[in-house]
Length: 204
Image (cartoon, rainbow, N blue to C red; front, top):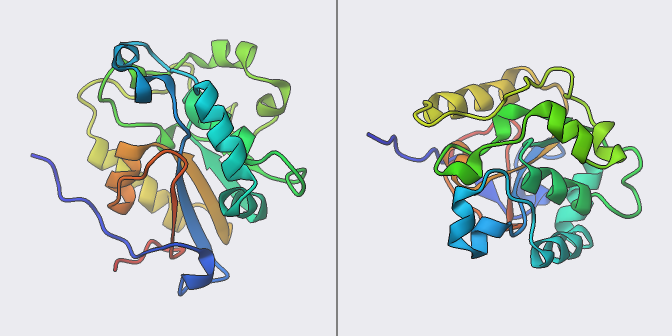
């Protein structure tokens, strides 16, 4: 049986977060192929649509992009739709020193083949050079995505614990996926939607 969604306190901006200037931000990727074409749910690792790229570029010019550029660390899922969103959100002034970490723990829970990834060796042949310079590639396994039947709640708990205990940065932004973020923060986010939480994921 599914566990009830976690419910850490959620805020619209870091200024509202009680732990400010320390904060966490969770964002969902922009529109990907399977979000608008059900047939693509059977296709692994869909990229963003043209509309999704425009959506991410627009969000990058607004509060979400500004927050990513001000974060001490940006953590992205290795699924193509999340990495493309992260790169587009970070475009523009102030992004030159951004630290980005590719981390398999942030990937989507398995719901269909669209949640399967691309092997690391293939990703490193395909992604643009700036993405190859992100941190985390060395630690990423060749086959890093979850299999059908994984205990996604266990991964969500482990990911939240990593945030609390292993990441020293004060301001961290995460770019990932709707269903998995719902398990971590108790809220399903729309494409390019974001919420902010206390640095230790304190409950509401």
